[in-house]
Length: 281
Image (cartoon, one colour):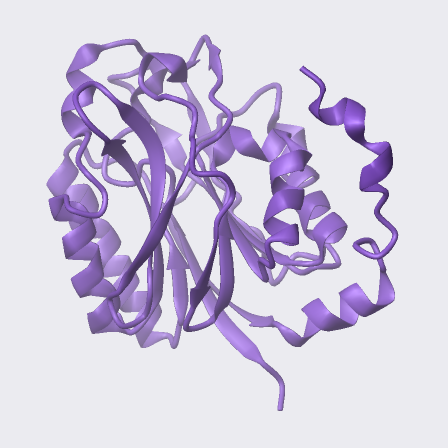
């Protein structure tokens, strides 16, 4: 019997405040559950705007502890209610003035499984992330969930194949990559890099991008086009809309993971003994 996992992604516009953003995502989670989804990922920093377009200390007020903060607790209740695994990207406070760009992973029974902290932090016009975040320090965890082994990579991370490979080596069957990325220089990479991670590592990828312009913060135009792809790098159904908010629900045949890895023996044929220069300082 085929091992089919129904996954969901939501690409959303910013409403203007935290509570309505949370409510919007709760609504979409319930819609996804009604469609039979078993796992769902929200977008990067899901309950706020992408505030890294500017450098303003007021946005530090969006931080909260994970898992002891109110949003994680609320998402645990939502996961239990919908019986879905949830990947929930938030702005984490880990002590006074210590902040991370983090995703919590919650199992389908509401159990908090752990978190991933964004490893690679950009700092350039429109993406002033070092003003807000420390680089992640938890490595590349993979979480045993009700639907399988789940890894997380966040936005700018996707430009770095090393972490994507680490997630594969740690046994990920699907990697979720929530993002906030705008039209321009990197747009043509959106359908290349993440499908390449799927191919090189033999796992599914589910990736999200915001949509719209958050005018009060800057001119970044987030271009959506969220998608799932197979371990062969093939899109599962249509790619999300480039301008509109959208809930994407797709059936993922996890039997493909074994089939692809048995055909393309990338793990067998790796030569880590020859890669020392990659980790040279």
